[in-house]
Amino acid sequence: MMNRAQLVSAIRAKKSVLCVGLDTDLEKIPKHLYAEEDPVFAFNKAIIDATKDYTVAYKINTAFYESQGVKGWISMGKTLDYIPKDIFTIADAKRGDIGNTADQYAKTFFSTYPFDSVTVAPYMGADSVKPFLQYDGNWAIVLGLTSNPGSGDFQLQQCGGELLYEKVLQTVAGWGNPGNLMFVIGATRKEQLRDIRNMLPEHFFLVPGVGAQGGDVPTVCENAMNKDGGILINVSRAIIFAGNDADFAKRAGEAAAEYQEQMAAYL
Image (tube, rainbow, N blue to C red; front, side, top):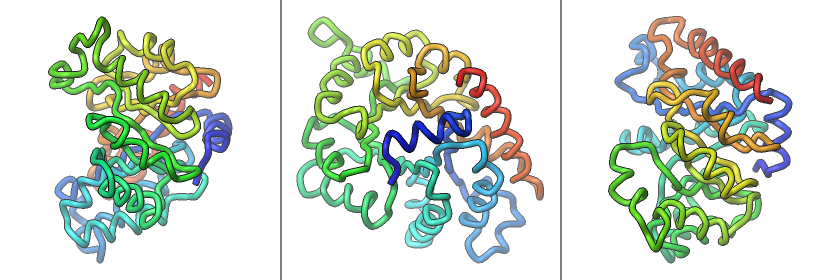
């Protein structure tokens, strides 16, 4: 498990806030890997080898593994085991239930599969988040402001004189602390990044939306960084699918190095 001090230390040592998203779609990986016993793990292993010097976190989007049934869960477990222990791990599972169910989800991603963190949806309130805060050393990464078009349906609606996402952020922040709570803040919401950082000066933000979704590193760093770095910028497709031939891993490493170089200017 990586605590906040260890994460901050990794950010400073690598001059990087890069998080590589392992959204490994079996239909998009190079076809020559199909000959491997476990094509998904073979792909992930090569990506990790090529990018580990430039990244401080890996985010495994569990949907791409769950959809493969038992084989996918096995691939996910092998991938998690292969990630170096000094790199932060995220289960992007977006769980959001309550009671015994939330307890079992927390057990799944903090015990059975020993991730450092898991993404959580807060719609059902404290009951859906607090079970993930009971594990010493682990993190809940709570959905705050997302970048999808449908975010306007609820998150950007007025709620008692403030926007709903602002109420969510301020309320959830009181359930934990900057050492066990992060928030998902979409990178394409450029105008809100600075306001959210002012609202939550100490918390880490997991920032998706850079790369294929249109966000950019300078805007995120200039508006959302704090003294500890304070952000993990996730890039998935733009790195892992930078190439689709025999040199796919080399191309991924080059893409990761380019992102790290951009980030280093701010660290």
